[in-house]
Image (cartoon, rainbow, N blue to C red; front, side, top):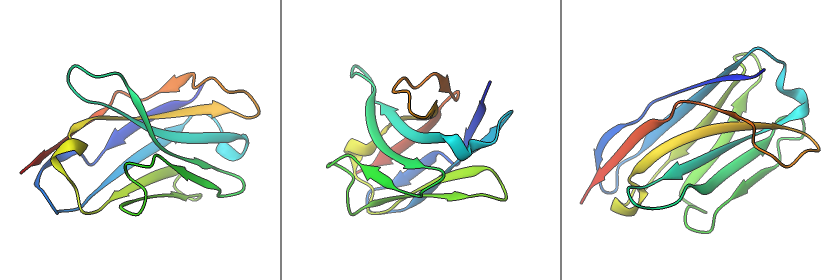
Length: 119
């Protein structure tokens, strides 16, 4: 079972940057994809970005493409989400999740970290 712990959220002004971290434990992530999702008040959880641990392939939602960058640190078993040029609409609770490849279900989730962007 993968245990995921997010950190790095906070309150920032529009245009600022934040870096979220997702530290994984319990398994070696070489056969996993790790994703970031977010949920704003009154809205459904949505996909933000993901990275295939082994290949390093990355994917982004159109709404964050060009502003957010996902990366991994093999030694620390940690995935990062660098968020630049933040907008008020990026305000949400951000979750990281993991799924074992080739399965499609994200079945391990962190507790979430709040990101608030003031305009």
